Image 1 (cartoon, rainbow, N blue to C red):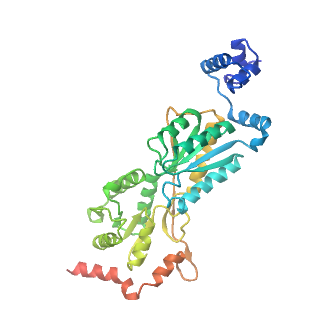
Image 2: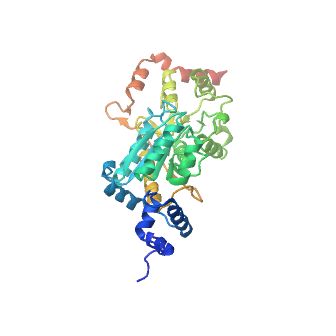
Image 3: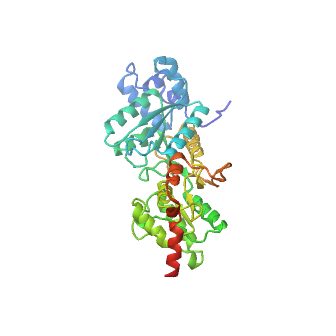
Amino acid sequence: MGKITDRVSLQDVAESLGVDVSTVSLALREDPRISQKTRDKVKTEALRMGYRTNPLVSAWLRQVRQPEIAQAGVGMAFLLGTGVNPNVAAELYYRILVDGARAEAKALGYLVTEICFGHGEESRLKKALAQLRYRGVRGVMIFDPEEALPASVVEDLETDFAVVVLLRCGWGQRFHRVGADVAANVGLALEQLRAMGCRRIAFPIHPSQAQRVRKEALATYLWQQSRWPEADRLPLPDTVVEHTPELFIRWMRKQRPDALLSVKYSLHQTLLSAGFRMPGDLIFAHMGTDGRPELAGVNNRGFEIGRAAIFKLAGLITGNRFGVPSIPLNTLVPGIWCAPVLDAAAGKAAAPAKAASASRAQPRAKANAPRAIRRTTKSS
């Protein structure tokens, strides 16, 4: 009977060398009972023939031989750059992403080792990768928003592991990626806002901030705006306004938009504190409403992005596709438009506790300020 597949087996390598299968197996596992000369010979022949170990079988055999490792299933590792920026781990969207990845890994029967890292941890990360190799863990998902992984760690990953990068992180790394379809999501948000009657839609991103994800978002916004009537087009800020509430509010009052499209959640609170009524004075649309039902905007479906990353990683592991892919592939998950969840009793968007208390703290006269400023500007 012929072979079912063309995959090179231990038996093939053994027959080519004229040795026993057990000799090949021990040699490839660097067993000291086999001489270094024989080990080198076996490894050279296995490489020439294209032999690759099956990580699922290897992990199972390691469980049998070394039960002290206590693995109940095949492992994966998450490298999470939460120590680089302390705000990252606190972000709701990040937690949703990782929860999706955990859920899919569990559904597929994988055990997950989570390794958090920050700056200057090259030695610890290299030791962690060595431990993963020893345990037979060959699949790694990376979340590295600040691109803080040391070059030597990336080189190790490129050599021995199947890797998927979460979101649009790690542009300098040659791995597969899974993330939100930013261009499609911005287009969807603008389409929905225009359908709601909004004509002047502001996007408070300065060109100097057009990096990574924001670059795609800004490009899509400018392209869509170029198709609108000239009276509907708004200029970008002439400086960075997102991080300075005074500059941001001044820019908003000058532009007088019907809607604001934002990637920064805190701007919603800034507008509330300045007395803007939403949707009374304008519509605030957020490009990441995952876990924020009080806001209108695009839900990036972060949970599904996390699941998709693990689904792709599992395929790489079972297919023995380790190291740098010849063609890195980007998997883009489209978002969905979400209207704010209304409080049935009050007939308005249900706001989180902080937003609600901030809104109640504003006097009525101050709440009407943006509209009064608009009338003054028009009459002058």
